Length: 150
Image 1: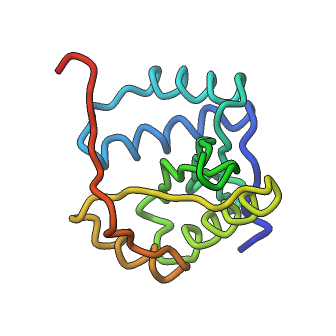
Image 2 (image 1 turned 60 degrees about the horizontal axis):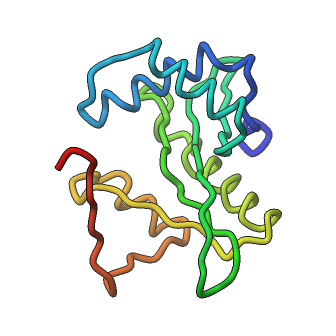
């Protein structure tokens, strides 16, 4: 599976945008394919995220997107695994785990202290997947959010 995972390029934009749009709809957002394409194109151009794709028979079937952060207390880079998606036809074949392994490799090669992610309590698949690949549930802090306009 590892050889089916690679860094995304601008040439992947059409297929990647379709996957990203499906991912957003999974989280109850309205489909916006052109917005997805614009957003991902900017991420790739500005290199402000790392995107890896899973390929199966020359077709993209999944992706993971990570954003760089920093840990002041550890004085190192930290990665936010913000997006992980594998299309419904390709689930259960190890693509999610392979994408996460690629994300772990990014952590190692960028000399970071690790990565973290957030998922909803209702995401049963994710809540089984993440502990199985070495993530630990962190209950010691409260997570708060502030949104512009509130």
